[in-house]
Length: 251
Figure 1 (tube, rainbow, N blue to C red):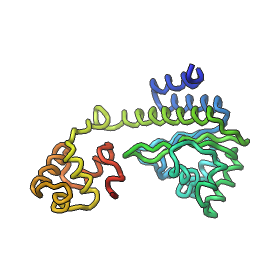
Figure 2 (cartoon, one colour):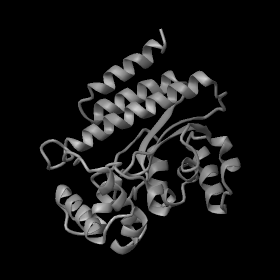
Figure 3 (spheres, rainbow, N blue to C red):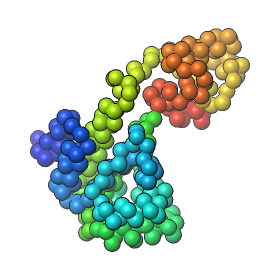
Figure 4 (tube, helix red, strand yellow):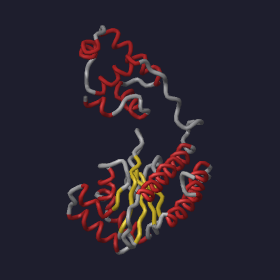
């Protein structure tokens, strides 16, 4: 068998998730199986008033959560900051090597120890067009990060966040969640990417070796297919859907 039976059951149950209470129970159980005591599945948003499209699900001590929200620790959370430096899981004790901590960030880590968060493992979850997120597992004692533990935590984070996204999408007003992604031609995507770079029609025409009216036509047709009327809206939607990437906009 390629994966542990408990992990296999977790994946199966995530695919049939019913609500946030069900997801919380699943995460609580798998957290203990991984050797941790607390978990946090969160998008990096304002925890004092999270937007409707964000997931905030955790089993941290209520006193720590209240303290973090009151002092707005989530704005400077060193774990969240470190998660932007990698796509794989990392131990909290490695954070000082990943970024230069401010005095406030050091204090946040120190205060968290008093609430049973002495060591932890965090897995970044970055989905194009969505809020950044992390799935974290905390405990009181240090832990050795084996390849097996890292792989299991990575899988738990991936399936848990996908289950959370399905729950969130089910609440959106569109009957099928997100509207279908329109099919765009290669030339249309090239034009959109250059619009994202701040290029005008004349510059795009020169770079692509086509006429200016043709550029205008490609962009207008892409906007029509997306049902938008402004070029910034077109760029945002294309980025959200993964039709172009962020690197295209800074090339």
